[in-house]
Image 1 (cartoon, rainbow, N blue to C red):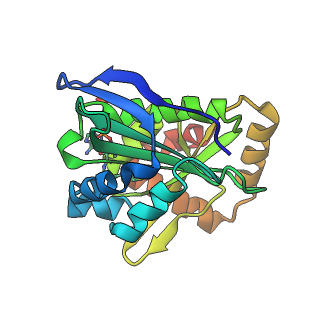
Image 2: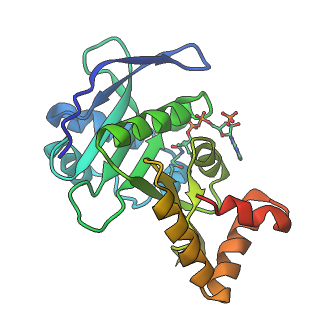
Image 3: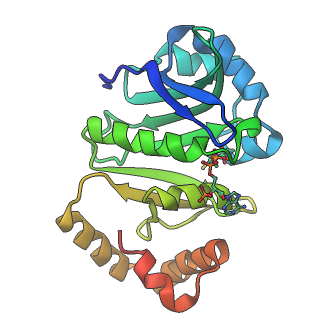
Length: 225
Ligand SMILES: CC(C)(COP(=O)(O)OP(=O)(O)OC[C@H]1O[C@@H](n2cnc3c(N)ncnc32)[C@H](O)[C@@H]1OP(=O)(O)O)[C@@H](O)C(=O)NCCC(=O)NCCS
């Protein structure tokens, strides 16, 4: 269970000059979440899978705001105590055994490309350290280059041990970050990678090439987590 209390004292100035506060989710945030869902475009909703944006989902977020196995953080704009939610990120799976906790993030369209996503990702990695996590995982569609760019820029790498998942015509790839520097685990990942079938390797590689336009010769180094 998360014991971290974010009270809203954490603030950053975005590239557009606006000041944003970070705080943990509260039980009373349901209405704010409904407005936040409204502020996500159809494209953002598609990237922000799984895609339920209704009262039931808002309540499921706020009911166990920061208890159980999920840590939830919101980026809030506005002077009022509760403000407007412009970004939401979470780490799920804190209490599961033999599971790498999953991170998710979604910023409303009006606030894209002004530095909020990257700042929030850095903060979530800090929180993962405080939660004593070894690693964090995330899934991202391969046609979401902005998300992949920020994930890589804060240290996530494509995990070749998890094959890409096909969903209709979409492909979800998995990325991972080592929170603690663990040489032994790094070596195990490389062994796992070497044991992958050629087909899985080729799939992972073709996804990398497609997403990042990286020359084939440079691919192997990107697997070194
Ligand atoms: C993906 C998302 C979290 C990124 O957050 P953001 O606040 O828009 O991102 P930032 O402003 O912090 O950073 C954007 C970076 O992406 C880069 N970028 C923008 N468009 C890009 C593109 N098409 N390809 C590659 N990089 C791109 C920017 O140059 C910037 O990089 P820099 O900081 O190195 O200059 C946010 O856009 C979002 O929530 N989108 C909708 C939902 C979603 O995709 N969630 C993720 C699901 S896995």
